[in-house]
Amino acid sequence: MRIVVLAGGIGGARFLRGLKQAVPDADITVIGNTGDDIHLFGLKICPDLDTVMYTLGGGIDEEQGWGRTDETFHLKEELAAYGVGPEWFGLGDRDFATHIVRTQMLGAGFPLSAVTEALCDRWQPGVRLIPMTDDRVETHVAVTLPDSGSATGAGERKAVHFQEYWVRLRASVPAEAVVPVGAEQAKPAPGVLEAIAEADVILFPPSNPVVSVGTILAVPGIREAIADAGVPVIGLSPIVGDAPVRGMADKVLAAVGVESTAPAVAEHYGSGLLDGWLVDTVDAGCVERVEAAGIRCRAVPLMMTDVDAAARMAREALTLAEEVRAV
Ligand code: FO1
Image (cartoon, rainbow, N blue to C red; front, side, top):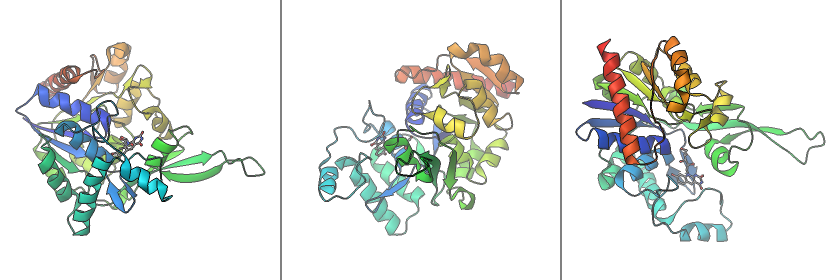
């Protein structure tokens, strides 16, 4: 079975670990979000691609969900000693090697998709990981920072890089707009549209529907290819109850006018894209509302407490796909 998964960071990576366990013989292609990418210290850092690669390759810092296990931070400390910032983004020594190799290969003219394939040669994630595009896309967030200096006390409105919003600001101020800068001019990376066209099923894991899955869908051609693929498209809600399972999805959902509930996210994707939607058992009361939106819906446990739980979720998603296909 050929499965295509649109993945962001931690939630997507943990779901993929369960999917691999659930269907070990499946041919899985992951289309990775690159809107979180950031250039620091002259290096290109791809957090969501690295989180998938490290998680499936066995190198992830498990409780953080990002970065490498057994990390040290000598390089970070030395940079800080030189007053070279930013200090708020925690890059470890082992992780720096990935960014150096990536930047070196990009500098030699290799596209990001080829670089990602080369990095995965080492990590053997057991899936084909393709960035959504080889072109530069960076998510920026419009915020109003409480500017203590100004006479009127009015805040200063500015756009900050997604990582600054997420990591330095901890999403402590509302996101007024979320913009994947460069998305309109971006083209799907080689292999992305082919993988979608050849898929037997397409999955939206419990990744952030705005800054992860949403950013992938913002690359022209990808949303249309999925809508026209003619195979079941099944999503798993990243919101359980009225709160995101992890991260701060509710902050960016508000920016796009979507309430932070499981059915609202399904409606946001729309029945033109989604054929089925899994909500957690606590949201069983929402099944009817999702089905009224033309999307098949089931309530199953969605807390990825361990790989077995993620595998059960993956099996539920594939079962729903077969039900949808049978219609
Ligand atoms: N997240 C944090 O909350 N704090 C960090 O210092 C941090 C550093 C970091 C370094 C490399 C990397 O690949 C990811 C990192 N992340 C950090 C996570 C990152 O912000 C998120 O994984 C994604 O961008 C959102 O999915």
